[in-house]
Length: 368
Image 1 (tube, helix red, strand yellow):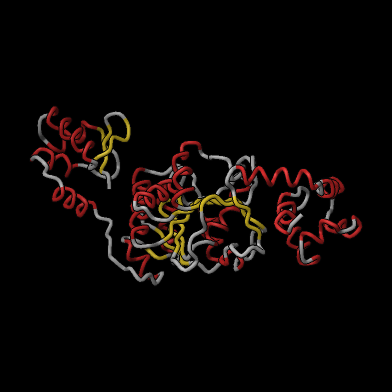
Image 2: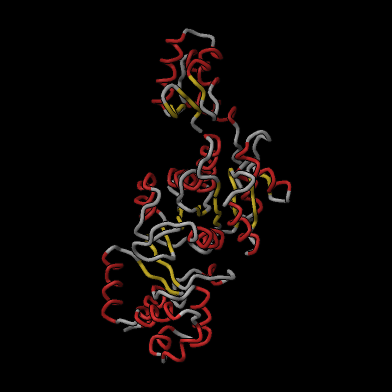
């Protein structure tokens, strides 16, 4: 077998944790030496006979080659820590991955990258802000990193793709598992316009223990971490803590004090995170060459949309009544103070033009 196959066996070998495998590499210097090591040499690394036996029994060249060929057939690259294309950023974190499974490409290490993270069950406001910052930072040349999860993660990727910018998703499951299924379209696009990585091989289902591990990779690939929306006690803070340990800049989007899902962000700001109200707040700190100011302002967006599109008077009135948070059509009618049928016609036209979105039946919101 060649060196890559020995690394592939070592990465996949059951019975030993990543920490144990790193200790073995320190002692033996390479997977090839470990593969041919005597059982009595390996036994001290295991505290249970079952784990030891599972590890020893995995030394099966035919099976290793068969499984490795399955990766190649699926267009998956295997990158071990001695490979030339292993990301240098991972070598600098306290707990580097032994190897990675990759679809697409790694981000350019010379370019600025930011992780955009937050709640899975986010509000409409959080969703739109994640998409907005993913899109506008992407336009400014920043690489967008996130976890391809439901909610904030997925919307950050979505925004980057809208800007034809690079975005990478870090999975907490096997590289061939689309999770959640609703993000299937993102998986397909990101393979072509970005990248998807995982520490887990084929067929590994998502489970709680894998997500904290993947979070260190999200922060590891990034120069900074933007928290868009998070509750007071949130799994998002695992990534933040790991980012702080790795020396990353932490940013947070403020929210209203009464919003439960903004309390985590507000607390981060109180503890010293950079407050973010516009894209340049991030670009200036990360020393990006492109420091164009892009403000998050509903009024500005309204003005731009009205100037770009020749809206009828009633459409201007209805559009000015829309907010990021969805409103029931009766509430919009009440604000607009024009005939209900005129409001409905205006909403339909605005939706077709891309200025409004119907989030659920008869609920409309501003589309940033």
